[in-house]
Length: 396
Image 1 (cartoon, one colour):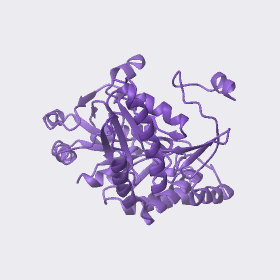
Image 2 (image 1 turned 60 degrees about the vertical axis):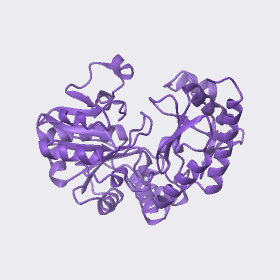
Image 3 (image 1 turned 90 degrees about the vertical axis):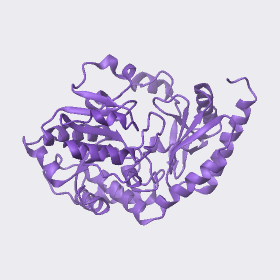
Image 4 (image 1 turned 90 degrees about the horizontal axis):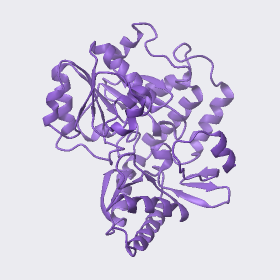
């Protein structure tokens, strides 16, 4: 299997973690040797309800027996997609009323960019430095890290950058700006939260100049920060909301949501954005089951309680700080060597940790929302044990 993996499946890095998976359940992934691995990553924030949650499996199984793909997006009325979009709208501010379902977060970003340009008639897009919104060509154009995108130029034009949390940079938002796109909490940059009412100030400036505000909630959305979406913490409602990852408990999905007025412009020209598999009924059923479980349970409130538990347990000289909110946390280590060693040694201890894209000193902790207090304590004990051993070495 390992030989075939390297020979036939395209790789994204020279040294993948390479675990051979046999099954997964709850907060654990089991390898082909039968070893259980406690999952503190949740498929990079995707498996909101853990692995193979019974309500999600039931919804998938039921829908798969009724019908699966029958027609390209938007042509047929399919109950799971309609029910999902309606239920989501009931949970959002009134201006976020219409949802376009797609296949991934990065596709949702592409759709949001097209929508903003089409609605405003402008072309300039402003993104944040060190932003990450995906890897398709439009999303890649928004990335602030030149070394990641230089090899793929030319990218889409008229993209500029502002510094996240910089009030001074709000001057760059002008009547030429179609949209400002921000991660509500910067992910790849190190789980950086907005401060000093930053998002509220961006919202006001966008409104003043007629620009749209796009908030990328692909990572913090769906209860991970203690609210359904992180923007609810910051007194800021976007014109376009982008989501993905944790939306369907591990199935491939994304969406962007806006007002009826804004979204209608994608029909002029006709089929301004189209997708074959967007709104897939099986995936929409999983998304609906996920959303109902998150909103009808205590999982969102528990995310904040679990944040407190993590922060109380993970106190160590090698941990400089813990960033993030709820169950979107990053351990900022003293240096990148310690971060790398922690991730790799945790694997050997049966604990899944992971890196962040741009901040090399950070270690991701984004477990399923369903993780138990006992499992949190189990994982944190392993982290502290590893750090104790590293602290006894000459790691500078």
